[in-house]
Length: 243
Ligand SMILES: Nc1ncnc2c1ncn2[C@@H]1O[C@H](COP(=O)(O)OP(=O)(O)O)[C@@H](O)[C@H]1O
Ligand SMILES: [Mg+2]
Image 1 (cartoon, protein in one colour):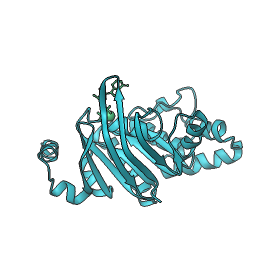
Image 2: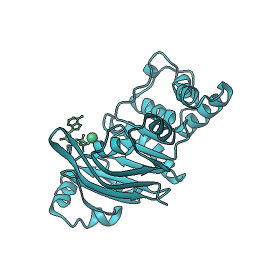
Image 3: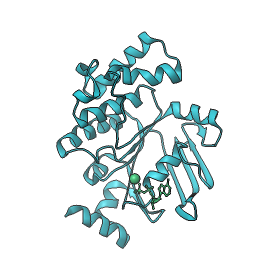
């Protein structure tokens, strides 16, 4: 049973259809890179997958949950699905440790001692053990993004979704965040990531999906897809990145 099933999903904003029948499956432990031009529907697809946007038709299942409009079902789904965005949205008045312990406490009613232990574990995973008591504004952008990832991991998700998490970062800081994601991939996390980092997608993603105009235009094993694009649109997209 795949960990994620997206079946013929259509999504419109008003009269504009931005997802025009998207289907994909993700097996447990797979890493899928979503690439494509700005406006091609990548973020919308990711948001539909964890129920942040309602779909108009089609079906989505993730981590054993069917995405629906039922708030209770959505709450359960979100315990199992982490999402990280370009903006980290840490609470500035809470320490790193408190930021990470917040959701497990509220959503899962985890006891403080246990949530502290988990927070220390996930902070170690992202290489920031020594920052437990620091405040977000004492950290670099890359460090803040790693805290945001750790905060998601503290919920012990089955699937992680990443939407251009390095786009606001300098190359050096980008690298440290990508390293964390690569480690997660190696540890067997099921991930879908929207990214502009083509070299990273090629190296880490088991499969890459090129979206164009609201459709999956081309997809395949990452190395093959990048070295031998079949459509003129992907060829142009890959070429533009090299410049
Ligand atoms: N909340 C919204 N309301 C109206 N249009 C939207 C909304 N979100 C996205 N869109 C439109 O949907 C299209 C796809 O956007 P998006 O999924 O953000 O693309 P990408 O992430 O690939 O850049 C764009 O034309 C965008 O303007
Ligand atoms: Mg986007």
